[in-house]
Image (cartoon, rainbow, N blue to C red; front, side, top):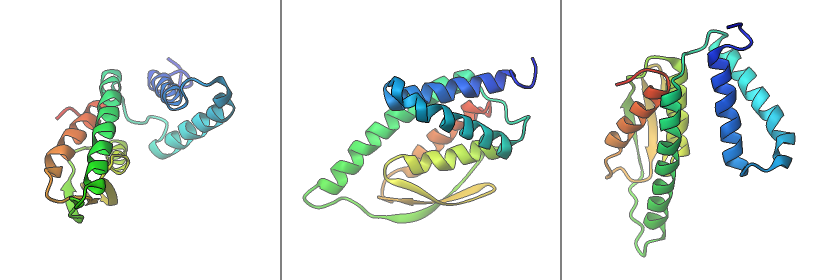
Length: 160
């Protein structure tokens, strides 16, 4: 397959278009913004990862999407319950989490996903470790981060 139509590129375009459709409920008017945004995101991704990039797993991506949506929903409900309670149940703090993901794109997706999930925020990312801020340090954040790392690992074929 030529460089222009590589399997990875087709997979990335399909994933980006699918994500755009999810985010905009398939509104045809959104494509005026969507096409340039997707093109810029893909161009930036290729610039950062290089033309060879990192191999992706279609199965890993298809498993990651519902995982992310479910965790976002459940995490949002949990955060709302904690902060809206009569006595808010929070104990914010910082922690370090060692990464076992090998590729830089996998580590970046992991760090960005941590920040998108309610109650956690990536503060700093080093080669094999991230520092994060959590809304409640009493929770079992380590187990949750390990689950997320496995899900990201499947996307990049780094099954743990």
